[in-house]
Amino acid sequence: MELRHLRYFQAVAEFGSMTAAARRLHVSQSAVSEQMADLESTVGAALFDRSGRSIQLTPQGRVFLDEARKTLDAAQRAIDLTRLSQKGEFGTLSVGFFLWGAGGFFPRIIREYRRRRPGTRLALIDMHASEQQIALEEGRLDVGLTRPLEPPFTRTLQSELLYRDPIVAVVRPDHKFADRRVHVKQLAEEPLVLCDRKANSPLFDGVLALCAAEGFSPRIVNTSPTWSGVLTLVEAGEGVALVPAGVRHLRAKGLAFSELTPNTLSIGLAVAWNPNNHSAALEDFLALLREQRARIQKSGGD
Image 1 (cartoon, helix red, strand yellow):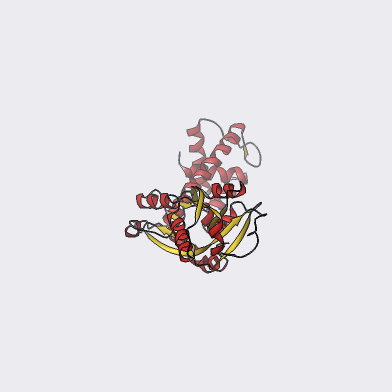
Image 2 (image 1 turned 120 degrees about the vertical axis):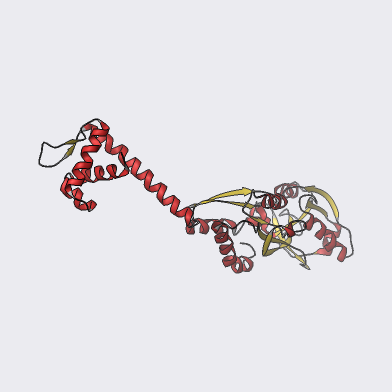
């Protein structure tokens, strides 16, 4: 039995006539009759009741029709998916991200990518920036929204800067800095909360340098490896936190975000990938980010 038998059978069942089915299939009536006879012989049951003016399905024929449709649908799906794969429009793209950097624009990018490439399955993986770069190098990740690359990854990966996120102060709403611009010198007498250096050395070292430029050493009273942990410490009254502005997407309620002046410290967000990955799915994702980069930069990542 071949798929041709099933297609002919489905046509006869639909039109109730060998002649009409033959016209639809662009074959002779004798060819359809011969194929149906072969099919019934293979199945070992009468599939048609030919006693009336039109051909009707027997109970066995109705059972067979249901299964034949499933088989034909599965065969067509196999063909469609293969063609999509041939054009690079099918498969999986693994995308690494971390929350503060992807908080604003990331969902919009993902929705648009899915609209453009419905055949590609996206695997979205929340992963620290340094972990992303290792995974990209090892081929476990296709693309990452991460911090700008540093050695040794600059030798094996490629990246493009998307935007730079300014550093802001986060305080409780009853703090004197709430909803006002804060000069860096005003932080000299404040207890500070930071993301720990192991988790984010560019920011930690940047804060030390920023304070040194204003003539003081910061009084760091606590750190956390996560931004949610930093915000929790601020809520608990531990002190003032210095975070990328994008962190406000994590949990803005109950806290105030204040601009710093002079505002010379920012953290970059980049897209990184392995140049040995030549998939069309990756190329389309990079093209979308480049297309949206001006909008991302203008809105500060929102």
